[in-house]
Length: 418
Image (cartoon, rainbow, N blue to C red):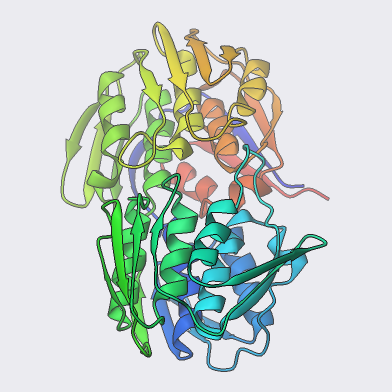
């Protein structure tokens, strides 16, 4: 069990690069299965979730080669269509591999996925979509077997704009004969990145970034080299980390339009922003101002930023209110913030945060990926030393977070556990 040891009170200043996107990399890695050829990916973050996904690909039969700047995936000789239960349980996003395996081989077997316990995230929408494509689904002893003679194009209406279901249906239908339409599709930038990558492979997909996506099936896909988009959640996290310390930072390799709601709220909190094409400069006030947030599907305020922003608001002037509309268990991190002196009250979907002058260092534990990042954010401004335990959650989704924060002036060290 590794930990971060953070001595708070250092003002973050300087410049840093934003890593490639976790949430774009995972479905794009899954897409490499479809071609049966070689895929070269650049700017893939070095994080636990990527390592788990590549392990699954190796078990399936893919050849993986990693160099300093790229990952090369050869999916020509896949020998099994079953995702190992042990690896499936490590992270929820492993479900995204199902669509790609079905799309190429017309059958796949997998168990229910694991991951962060932030609330109900059923895969019903994935399975309902698969059924509408003519895929037979059998559930037995925790395993799900999907099979069909061929994918039948369909018009699929999603009950909720699920990112994972949208991506899985895209992957499953790229090689199908005919046109599939996804209505009420998720509109996240990561879906646009997946569309761009698949189209570069020879797919015919349009509409990503809107709520209607059309996939016209093609017979085969080709080799591809592709650059992963920057991680918008890492960008938002670094801005919040600097803001809580009263800092002044520059983010490079960032797409500001991807985090417009976050930038808007930072501005409401008193931060001065200078926004370029691929750069954000931010200067925080000595005392942040309280604000109100409601999480919504893209292009609304991202649920993945809620906990980090909540941590930042613990020392803002006034009372902040957060409404979490996506995941019901996303407030677990607030119990740990209270150990540091934060004044947070939870009432159903609502969190009320009364800003205090200063947090105090304490021993806390990360309960999930973004909740862990929230604790690191809080610790950066706290008086004294904070120990954040169970940082394996954080390492799932942030590349070299401690190194980036140190480069900005933070006093943070990683301590390896037994």
